[in-house]
Image (cartoon, rainbow, N blue to C red):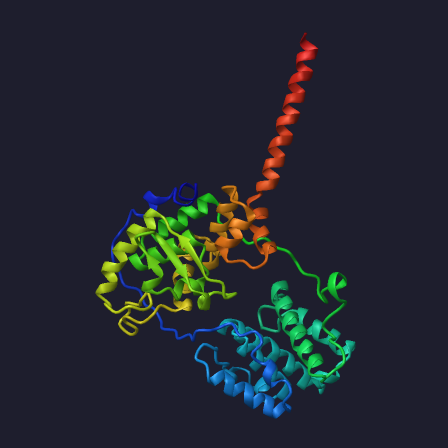
Length: 397
């Protein structure tokens, strides 16, 4: 059932098999390893000694992502903020996650600096001022109504909740001002919006495939694998040649490349297998060495790994030509998981396929597929139809 649902567009996608060149950029990313309790051994030290020990521990392991302190100068110069972010790095979080944590905390520390406040001394009045600062319209000229998305606000607040939990644990303050209630009584400072991800209609999907068919073999394979296995952008770009098993038509997604450090093995279709064979022939003209699967063929970055941003540019260009501006690299993952829900996969099977920790995340795709609603609607309509027929039968007897 999986292959039937996923690849009904095979003739369209394989219509054009020409080779071409497109510019790509390079990216370097360090691997990560989950070490949740690594900072516990340093908690008894003084703040300065604690910070030094944490940084030495980070440098001693090549599997821990390095924090780019030049991007967060205020955090880097603040003892508590630096200690907290260093601890998050030692937990083995992905580089993108660390960058997001650093940016959000940097924004907050900049706000406190402008207000003349210290992080461990704030009261609810300061919290309210910061919330107003988050939700206010953008000050960018020409875009007065541009506001921060609700999901972005929630990310900011999540970082601050964790930061103040850390300060409470270190006895730097007595309570967490960004945490309202405990357990089931806990509530968010800003109400969370629950939006369903956008997926293309069948007409839009056909336009996307039509434009994708004009792309070089590498880009067509990347799109096919991304949809087939529901891969995240980073998981796709960090695939290596050894991760693909053509004999079983499976992709091994390594734990260190995933968002939540969960490895998984996923199938891919016959169509993708044919594209894979064609791409390997092309890849040999760039490099015969093992390593990253997807390589750039631009003169400047020839045979270097394709970056996530380069792949995003490719997808954005396809979306623009297909007149589907909402289509992004992650849309392919949304579409794949929604199709699995439409094919009546069990919710736990979809969660395993997607690598979700929380089943609530997977429920989004069940809602998006309208599977439960459709089944109930059809059953209701069938019952109503039967009742009407019986009433007509009694009337005409």
